[in-house]
Image 1 (tube, rainbow, N blue to C red):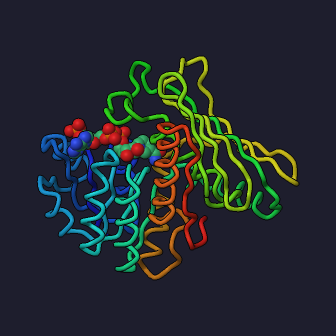
Image 2: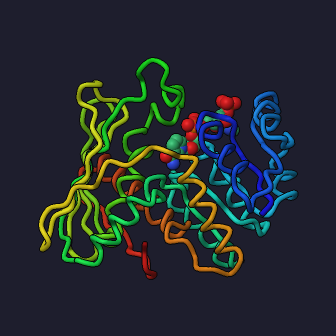
Length: 305
Ligand SMILES: NC(=O)c1ccc[n+]([C@@H]2O[C@H](COP(=O)([O-])OP(=O)(O)OC[C@H]3O[C@@H](n4cnc5c(N)ncnc54)[C@H](OP(=O)(O)O)[C@@H]3O)[C@@H](O)[C@H]2O)c1
């Protein structure tokens, strides 16, 4: 699968470029960035070509990988899908429900393959844990604390303008929602409150009646940082295990699934339809924070993994 990479920032360097270069079924064709020198530098590291024109790179490949802010990713993903290219997107798919739904519709109309990179969900240990927990069933509650800081010295993510504005909800929120969905199902209602800095406290009502509680921030005092997740129900209380942090390996799993789906295999569970539902959940949380009201979300009419 011939791939073009969009983005030249920290995540393109740490995850996307090395994963594309390492995958046996991928030809890493080119890199687009708004800064041509950065695109040339990143492309040069992997023997790929630098592109200064978005459409030219889309035209030269079978699939695109995107490591850009969500509002920059969305229109590029839509153009690529309309041109018949498979999509490896990063989370969140978009900031708006309209954009995320348009991408999902373009993918569905053309029968394209898509994956959204909810990193931990592609870690085999977490996949095994969720599969085992799913067999026992009866889960009615979840609590996810995804709370850290990106503003400590040397942290590459602290320079990102959109994270400074909405990092707690939109940067780590997608991971938290993607984590609770396999055991509790799609979300039908959202209530949220903002705390100090960019803290978001979010309550999700799931289709089966279960409720999850998410605590999300990228700007807490370092001593308050934590990443914990617990499910509770008829089988007791289970804690999500601490997972190895290897984004290149996880992205390799996402690429395996995308290549297989493009070859006629099953659609990945974490595809753009799921990504669009997660955008709807986060947009509902933002609306609830603004209005002080609970916000309904339409549960998608397809199974969610
Ligand atoms: N799955 C995960 O675990 C995970 C982890 C980290 C990041 N991500 C996702 O990966 C994406 C990229 O993240 P990042 O950490 O690299 O930081 P980022 O700030 O989201 O993106 C940086 C890149 O976007 C470019 N950019 C910024 N504003 C732009 C604009 N208006 N037009 C065109 N290009 C623009 C930057 O170009 P310049 O260099 O020229 O400024 C740089 O190439 C984000 O969507 C993030 O959510 C996912």
